[in-house]
Image (tube, rainbow, N blue to C red; front, side):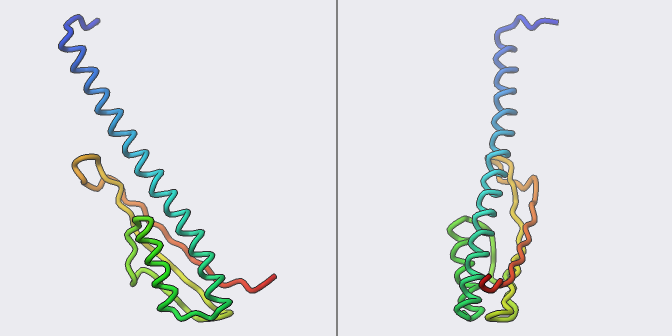
Length: 124
């Protein structure tokens, strides 16, 4: 059944544009979060290797990771970073959740959990 009314055609077109905007925004937000998490994971690996070599204090490691998380707009708090051991036995674990939200309304539609564990690996 064809639609002949121009007003109805515009309404259907606007509805499809809103649906497309909604899905593109969700996709963009999800890809952005995944990219930032990967950058954080790479930085975590770098910090653990450097801190293990230089025998840095857990407080310093946590501070470095929190600064990077803030730069990447990741919702990581200090208590979500567990630093165990030190030097050759250094191990760092980070667990956090990120909410993917509906555009304009800012309501959570999806929550993604990230977990990273890094151990110091001596020179090889």
